[in-house]
Length: 329
Image (cartoon, rainbow, N blue to C red):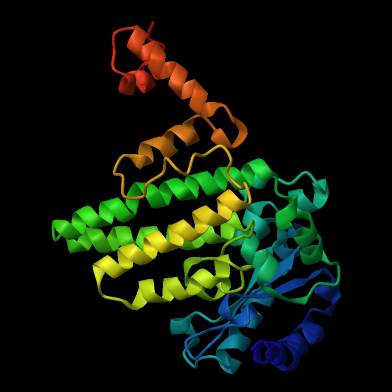
């Protein structure tokens, strides 16, 4: 599927660059992104591509952007009206790449600012097609930000937060809104829960997830048995029966739970305690996040101790959070 974009660059874009900007060609890193760059373009796709230059070089070469705009407008192979469909080759400073962290990562080597990087951005950097990169900047970024390089505690933190997203607005909340016939709210929560479920599948496999429109095809490339759940997602997305939707969501959650338990991915969580139909289960996940369970194996013991303290002070155990936050003695 990438053949069309490669030939477009070979036959149309590169001749312009070589004839007018050969002096900075060796400084360029050229990426073809989105559906086209990831090999999944169709009749609705347009060309999204970026040419990255060192910031000082970029500042001196604004004419390149104007020339590319004109050339793409005249030669676009994806759609004729480029101003409406968005096909573009953008000339960017290198400092904009990787959530504005590329230069720091390239300069600091293994000292990657993981907390400033989005999973969607990391996915794009690793999956988009790199057409031209003589200085191997994308290759270096990929090596330094490979999934196995991310600290395990950060994976667990992301998993716990995504699990919280699903449980707090998932099956139980959707059920209640369907019972109330508040279908607008049910659909909104369904969309959010569906996205959280998809993204959670990537996280438990320690893989970066893409932007929403790429979730479906990318999910199918995850390792088994997680990728096998794509069939359940298919049922989930096409059925109009709310009960089948909820059953499918629970089936996917159960598949994830079994995967995590078998591989000891989230040992700090007691999955026997987590019931997606329990409207208060989000409290458990909120507590896990508040007490940083991903790096605190004894977090639940701390909660139990605080509940006991609340009782000893004459309050109910459910008031432990107030006792903790306000330091009530």
